[in-house]
View 1 (cartoon, rainbow, N blue to C red):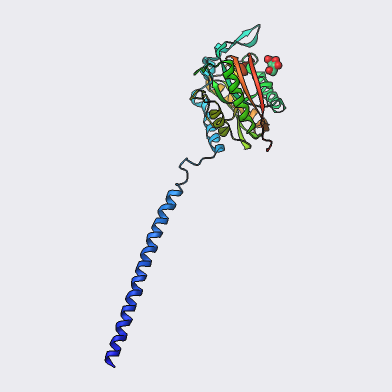
View 2 (view 1 turned 120 degrees about the vertical axis):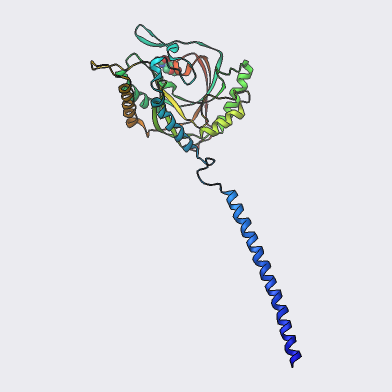
Length: 319
Ligand SMILES: *[C@@H]1O[C@H](CO)[C@@H](O)[C@H](O)[C@H]1NC(C)=O
């Protein structure tokens, strides 16, 4: 009887040892796997606000915020010989001829080759009317209005005056064909005017957001691939979607007798911009043409200079 009891106990003990061992191994495995899973998930999800997952619209919003602060941060530089975004002095660009503001056209050598999205007059007229109505009375001879048949969004340069890339007629034709092929893959952009800003260089800019269609970042990527000889350094931020409405060239006309001081003048510019914004921000438009433009004069698109335009309609019709 005693012997039998001892055997039962021994067998129970050896069985329990196995069970405990299996439990330990299981727990160990479980915790190891759990730890690995934790580490993995922290690798896959970077902490929020790290800046790596910012949407294109958010990039534009930040850029436009910065541009809107430019006038306050740098003052109205255009009142003391401003420069354009393309580092050209404004006073070099315009002259008064018989009391009329006239662009001074300078041959671009070699011609600039620009790719721009085109805003049809169907939309630009509305904007142009508001700009003229609000700014016209105060800047009679000290303002240049962008031609409303030529409102455009600068995308990508195959050659610009800072890094000229000369090309033969044949090379230009190859570029134009490549741009046409890019246009065939683009879908119409539905866009909304986010806000109007006045830069310290006196350029009144419309800054747009994208509701649907091919994003400008994607368009610029495709153009860069299609135009391998293009200047590495481009003129504008890859996210920006902007069009210039007008260029201020001097002080606003003063109806009162007391002269405005500088801070009053800035305040006045802000008021005019705010009035324009209250009329046209939120305005929606469709864009469905990509232009390959040879500009024979510097800033020909902005100043009604000499140019050769090849127009390509987007191939995708999905809006
Ligand atoms: C505006 O552009 C159109 C199209 O290029 C042109 O026909 C017209 O003459 C231009 N207007 C001015 C005032 O230069």
